[in-house]
View 1 (tube, rainbow, N blue to C red):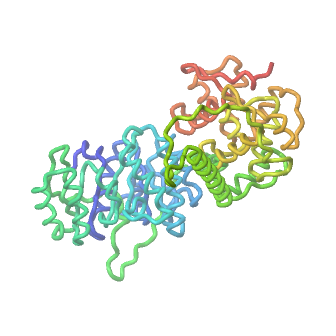
View 2: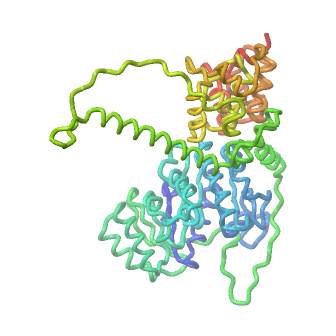
View 3: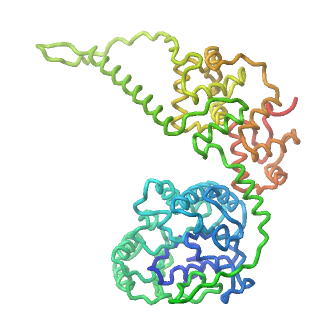
Length: 532
């Protein structure tokens, strides 16, 4: 018996092709959606669209679900829309099918899903049933190099997603090729017919970690002979272990295997008004963060935003090579220094080197002049570009977070740390009190002269080029309210959900860069952005 409480569990639904696992999952999904639960089905095969039609194919008899992508989609999607779509779903009450069957190659589907899973995990904070059909595509046991990031994010959703509202359901015909760390997290197992010994062994591993071994042995013996549409439901936490014949579904069976010679006719679904959703998706596409694009694309966007014809930064591979070479040089210097120190405390006794363990006098510390490692016009394009970000704003001081944002880079990245380290060693940075500015030498290397203090209008223009449309919209609203706004009032004026992930992301971006002050529920624009 499938009870409402089991529907709120992390489920694993397994069975061979034609065993009825998708049919069973659809029946449970119908109950969820009819009950008003938020649910999102990720469909790589294009077989879930039937939820929108009645059992006889009548478009008027289906459930109110929106279909993104696929042959029956209300709104088409591309492999670049994963992040944008996830942010919309996190902020909405949509019940939807994300059909990735027509995205083209497996790499394109993984590209979409990687961005989708990451953004949905970051933004969602309300109960959401995430139904992953063919789950082994997204979390394989032996991932290829381009699958590891997606596998890790799916694992994070399954293991830790409960606190963010996620209720994951995993559907697979091959539990043996589904990541065991993911499968092991299922609270309830629904096992349909399984003939492969490897797949039954994978279920055995779940039994070892979740349930009684003796009962598990009996269960495994039944799996090869289960009839179509029948499964063993095992929920140790609810003390349920029984064989269930799943009833017919209330919507159109679009996953039915055609009989020999039968052709499944394409059906037209009832149109739904998706204009508002389409507009949101278009807006989100325009606000893809620059740091998620390719390194070369980053350099182009930053150069355009700064309005200057800066040399493009090296591509990511070249930057990593530079960083690696720098680390090797630093390690070699450290090794040479350690060997020299060791040699200074070795004395000779009968031709044998003996380490002198007596503590030497502490050396005198003298100021070391900055090394002139980066004269005017030298260094990589990226180093000069981030130095010029400071030079253009001199004498204003920036936090490291502000500097990195204006430079279009992540301050937590290894490449950023390498560039900053080189500028620091070269004596081009003035760092104090958690802020940074150019030294006189830095201005010279950047080819800039000290500028006049920036006006509030100058500061706003500087940030407008770096933040994107969403955060800038919040700045414009707060400019009209000098004393600030409550968080819900700001969200209302921006036509956004105050508890939504997108609104929270915009606020976080502004707050991290010191552009707003948040005191309880009150949000105020930073003084340097306000007109005098």
